[in-house]
Length: 179
Image 1: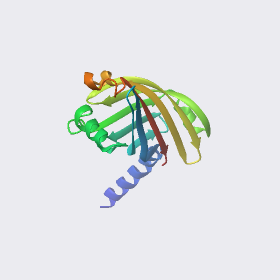
Image 2: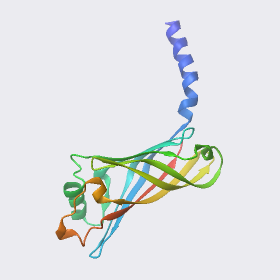
Image 3: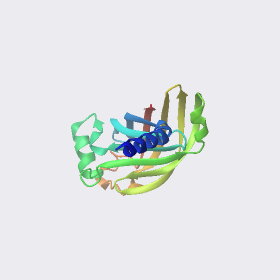
Image 4: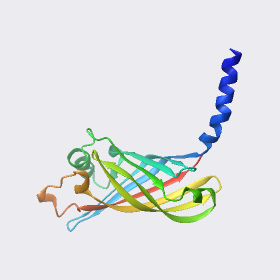
């Protein structure tokens, strides 16, 4: 029993620094905006989750597709059933790496490229995104916007709705990471 306690104590001391390197956000904001001739479509989720490894610069964002809120209930229904097929593809995810993780150790404002894979609708594509970071004592705030072509993720827009839905949507991600 004493050996088990000692082993757990050593493991705790060895792993403690690793846990301190990961910052999380349980209420990240992910939104998108589609501007088309007939109408603009905007949706937002405030329940995305994110993690940032402050030592390596690895970052991940995950959002449930059904968590997006729209101005019109019918838009949400069409989004989940016809375009995202949310029952089949319930989660969208971005996994990337900051080009320079060392900035995460110094307070200040930075714009840094992040290269990573965006998985939407079962299709993964690599993107390079410029991220605005504010590094503060005890927190890191992030903000990024980038265009995504819906066809790149096998999301089909019926010809009849071509004037209602843009071929490219603007994705915006915001998070406040804390230990």
